[in-house]
Amino acid sequence: MELNALEKSLMAAMEEFEIIDCHEHLGPEKNRLAAEVDVFTLFAHYTRGDLSVAGMSETVYQSLFNRDIPLSRRWEIFAPFWKQIRWGSYARAALLAAEKFYGASDINENTYQAISEAMRAANTPGIYERVLKDACKIRTSLTQCGSTDLGTPLLTPVMPLISGEVESWNSLTHPAFEPEAQVRFLDDYLDAVRRYVMRVKSEGAVGLKMMSNPYESPDRSEAMSAFERLRSGAESRLPSPNPLRDYIVDRIIDFAASQDMVVAVHTGYWGDFRTLDPLHMIPILQRHPKARFDIYHLGYPWVREALMLGKGFPNVWLNLCWTHIISQRFVVAALDEAIDLIPMNKLLAFGGDYGLPVEKVYGHLVMAREDIARVLALRIAEGQMTETQALSLAHQWFWENPKELYRLDV
Ligand SMILES: [Zn+2]
Image (cartoon, rainbow, N blue to C red; front, side):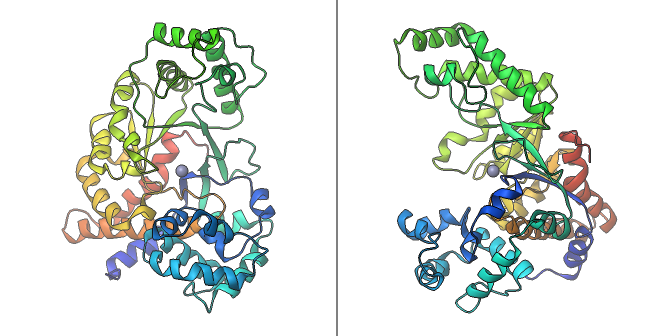
C-alpha cells in the first residue's frame, strides 16, 4: 500500500536526520574509483543470491562483469533473470539508487545504457561524500572491509574478532593479523590477539565482529591439548567446531569488553544458516555480562529468537542492518513487536551492508525510513504516541543509540 499522509510526513521529518550507518562493507573510496562500473555494478552484491536461485549459473553471473562482452549482450543475458528478481527487497534498493543518482525511473532495456554511462561519469573522487553525506546525511558508516586505513571520517572501522583461522598449526604460528608473531605456546597466540585488538583500536576500530555459530563452554585444558595435538603433528587440522577456537573466542570477547569495544554478531540468514541460529549466543551472553553485543540482522528467520535476546539480556543491542533489504514486510512486523518488547535505547535502525555499490546504501536507507514510518504511524493512529514522540524514537534509533553503543565521537 502506498504510504499514507502521516507516513509521508514521518518520512519527510526523518529525511532531515543526520544518521549513523550501523554496518557496511565499504572499502576505501579508491577501491570504488579503481573499479570499472556500469549498470551491473548495482547487481554486484546481494542480488547475486537471488539471480542464482532464479537459475543463473556462476559462469553466467561472472560474465555480467566481463567488460570484453558488449553491454548490450550482457543485458540480453541478464534481462530474463531480472524479470524474476525485480520485485524482491534486494532489487528495490537498486531501483531506488538508479532513480536517485542516475535519473532512471526503472532499470530496463530502455535505461540500462544511460544508467551505465551516468555511473561511469559519476565514479570520480568525492562519490562517497555525494552518496553517504549529501544524499543520505550519514555522519559515519561502521564498515567491515578488513582494514582500518579508510582515509575519511565518513568510514569507521569494525574488524574481525578472529582474523584468519585457528584450525592448523601454520595458521596459529603465522596468524593473519600478525604473521611475524612468535607463537610457541597457546598464551603466545593469545598475547598476539591482544596486541591485534589494541592495535586496531588505536587505529580507530570500535568493534569486533563474530558469527553466532555453535560454541561449547570454553575449557583451557582442552584448548591446550588441541593446541598440543597441532604442535606435535598428531592432528594436522582441527575439526570445526573445536575447543581451541571456542576458548580463544571466549578470551577475545573478554578482552574486547575490557577495552570497551563492541562485539558485533552476525545472526541468521547466510549460506547454511542452520549454523547461525541467534540462540547459539546465549551461553556467551551469560558468560560475558560486561561485554556489549550488537546483534545483527534480527536473526532472520529466527526473528522471535533474536528479539528475545534483546528482551532478556542487558548486554544486547538489536541492529536492523541488512534487514530492510531482506524483506520490508518482516521488518515492519518485527519492529512493531520490538516496541512492545524492548527498551528503546537498545535498537539500531539502519546499516546498508554494501561493499562496491555504495549508491544502494541510499536505496536501503529509503526502505528503512519507510518501514519505520509504517510502524510509527500505526502507533500514532492507535493513539499510543504523538508524532513528536514517534520522531524522537526514530531519531534515537538512527543516531543516539549507535552513538552511545559504539562511543562514537561524532
Ligand atoms: Zn555484512
